[in-house]
Amino acid sequence: MNVQLKAKLYKLLSIFGIERKLYSNPSYSQEGEDMILRRFVGDGSIGFYVDIGAHHPYRFSNTYFLYQKGWRGINIDPLPGAMELFKSCRPRDINLTLGIAAVDGTLNYFMFNEPALNTFDKYLAKSRESHQYKIIDSRAIPVTRLETILENHQHQFRSIDLLTVDVEGLDYEVLQSNNWLKFRPRLVIVESLQSSSLIDVMKSEIYKFLIDKEYVLVAKSFYSCIFLDQSSGR
Image (cartoon, rainbow, N blue to C red; front, side, top):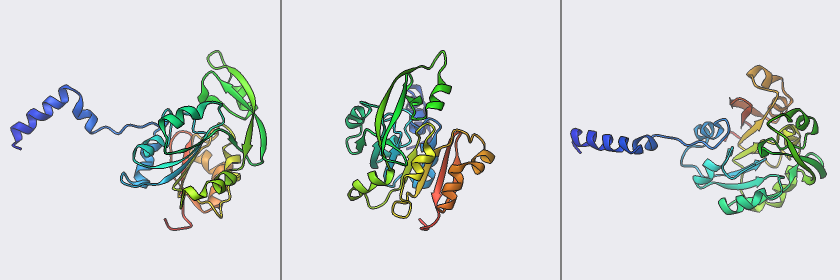
């Protein structure tokens, strides 16, 4: 194709906005975490994820970009009815309605008019009430340990490439509920609401916990911290 013809083609594509789409990278995460992940997993990779606090099939999702690339995994969210949309939009995934905690049982789940704020943490829930955001319901929801879920579904995967945890306040407890000797995700994304700066992160219990498990902090958005497993050399 000669230069003049190529220039005319690009001009035509620009008129319809097609050229911009060719160079765009759509992000579905709340803080662009999925775009950071691309640097670690590569565009051509196929893997398995575990998404705890999955919220929605693609709104504020750290895994939908990967799902579109052919990945599959386990989505977990305690909001009653939330998994019906997952089953429709992400049929390759395992979609579970329950909570994750350090001890099996039930916890009171506070639901807002903005579902992204839903939480098991009653103090966080109270602090989030405002003129704009209201608690509209609360229910006792079954909770179990992460290691139990992974043991029940381990026939579905050979390894876990990504664990993403965003449960509004109980993220550290979710990490504690895993068997890290048996199930070691290559990458871990975890929300740390008290850690908006790198200095705060390194003081947090989440950071200390994962460093002790031989993970290293490799990236950060505003609240999300991304850790890489150093023990296996993967």
